[in-house]
Image (cartoon, rainbow, N blue to C red):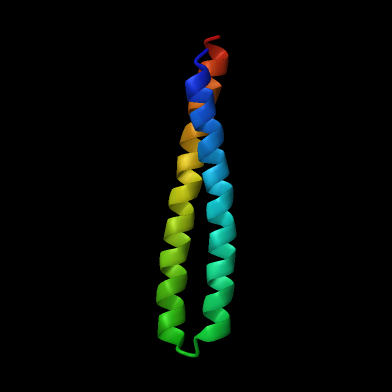
Length: 72
């Protein structure tokens, strides 16, 4: 029922979408600029981990939203 919580959930979803755009841009830029396979593998792994973190944050916010809907 809290409007503040809903605003935070929307904000988290917006951040996750922004993170997706940054992820795509970063991976694209990495593959365009680097010729070092070790560097590409390392940074791709880091970018994937960060993307996973963003996805998990969004999943948590969706779970909170679901709980709010069931209890309202």
